[in-house]
Length: 395
Image 1 (cartoon, rainbow, N blue to C red):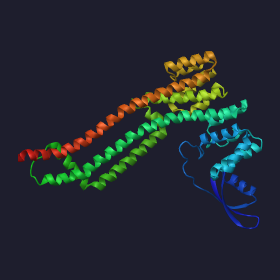
Image 2: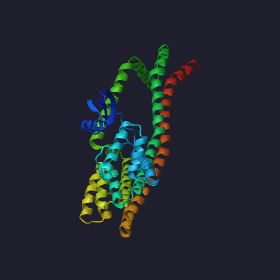
Image 3: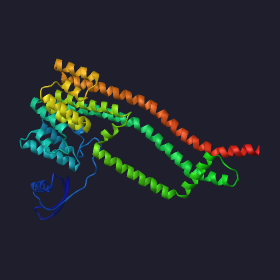
């Protein structure tokens, strides 16, 4: 957390500076280490971290930069020194300085990472701790970068497939709202002077248009209030059961979301096993990457593995497999390449998810366009039906 500090220098000058520290005592120690006497400390509010970052630091970017320096022949201390020198952000610089200071004191790199759980998750700490046992930190960092790239690829595909339907929905809703609140009331004024009876559907639309035009502000306030209440209810539900569990209850989305969760579980386990982490510890670490519903099954499977049961049968008993992944797990157990088979199973799941996204997008976008066209077309036809009736009467 960044702290704004006012301190007294040795020549009795008041200086102001910003330091990144875990608490006020840590900030005071950092100031005193610079030969200053802190007179006032105040915690600063920070902006929300960018997407894909923890505690304001991008683990992928940090891993890539550190990997490049280690591959070039620098030691871990020299690599962190280089990152500190080029870092201009006070918060990130403080994180790196704490790591560097701990290494100079002789502490293990994984222990220093574990001391900052808001920045470095257990998964990251686990692969670094395993790398310390094999003395191959660059390979573990590369595994993490590849792992995160695989997860981001599927997530980005989901997001990109939702952009175009969202734009269609917003534009269609805007056009419909404009027609009802602006165009329909003006048509109603014209038809009122004709003295003719209108088709009941047209009359209902015109009555609604006049009502919306006359009570625009109350309707807008009610719509905003409903949106806020609905958003609060959804957020409360997500906080209680989790977003993944909530979306998993949808009939069409639930099975495919489960496949996505299994893909992430298998990919995490495969990376940890290939990094040298025991299967029981890997299952414990991987539990933080999946939804609570699957996590309960994973905990029971972990207890079964601790009791001596094979991973494939434990996963199958807890419904954490598909027919194909079950066969691949059994092959991995027989060949001793369980980590590789888990990674290949995750790749198979990713391909299945990508194919489903493509099929769903090709089907959903035309249906959404048709629905929007039907709504807008119905409004226009209902507006012009009285005109056709007038023209027929005149003829």
